[in-house]
Image 1: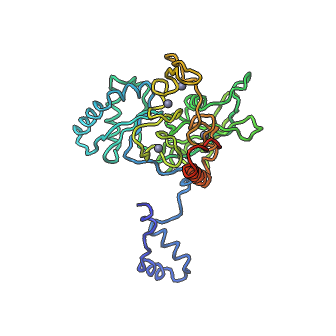
Image 2: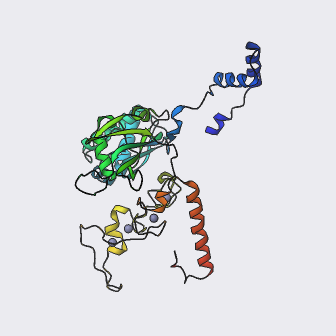
Image 3: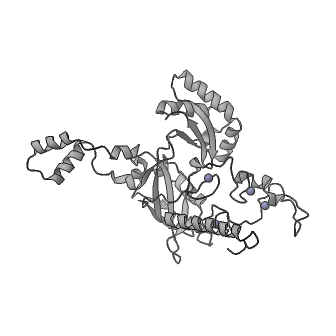
Length: 360
Ligand SMILES: [Zn+2]
Ligand SMILES: [Zn+2]
Ligand SMILES: [Zn+2]
Ligand SMILES: [Zn+2]
């Protein structure tokens, strides 16, 4: 659809008209005038930081994870109720289904919702018995994402310890700062050190935005306090990077376009959601035949076992920022090459029999 717009052929009669009106113009200038007349002026300055989002038929409602869990328990009832409210308001938008992710719920509709539809949905959700309305934000259409980075925050924020800055620390910092009041993060902030020997951090954040990049424009070049430091927000080089699916944890496609049925666990890659790993993961079940025999993980305790990353086989979870795949998340070519290598290795080991597979 977008390719079509940019391919609009220049009409010969337009060019002739411009030539008649401004006989002194050369071909280049005529071209420029023609693109201005036809609305094809230069690229918007923020196009670099802002990309088109997954689908405008998604309505995102950020809320706490407790709220998300209790709301999703009655999801089919909520779909029916919201659709009843929408019908009563005589709009032709209907909810197909509701899904959840780490930042709240996502309502999938049959058409792009309008502000009036969002208000109906907000109203329904905030009055629902399943949620604590104080922990629900207003719904939004995920039209675009903007990519920003924050500099000037220390990598070791606690003066008396070497504890690293985490993405939850960053979330707390952002929540305390009024300039982020109307901003919703599209994913967890990513924290890296400026350089191996530096004690300062670069924090990457993606925010929900509209295609004009309105939300990013408000933030770019703003400063804010973090303890006795002053942090600055910059537009990030708009390489959205290689997406990692939060459903199957493979790289190269987004969660919204994942084709596998159900969810996979980030820890053991088993067919369960990551938050249910303790209950469903094989490693946390008692197995006296294993060597050494394994006891059941105690109720309420996190899984103490470690796993090979399903992508790089390293000693971490598939979404870890120590993963080679994560470190190369802005290098599309690296990802393509790596997956090709993995495929190649797999077919070689299948050809040479399944006995020599422990090398890499
Ligand atoms: Zn996937
Ligand atoms: Zn698991
Ligand atoms: Zn376990
Ligand atoms: Zn890995």
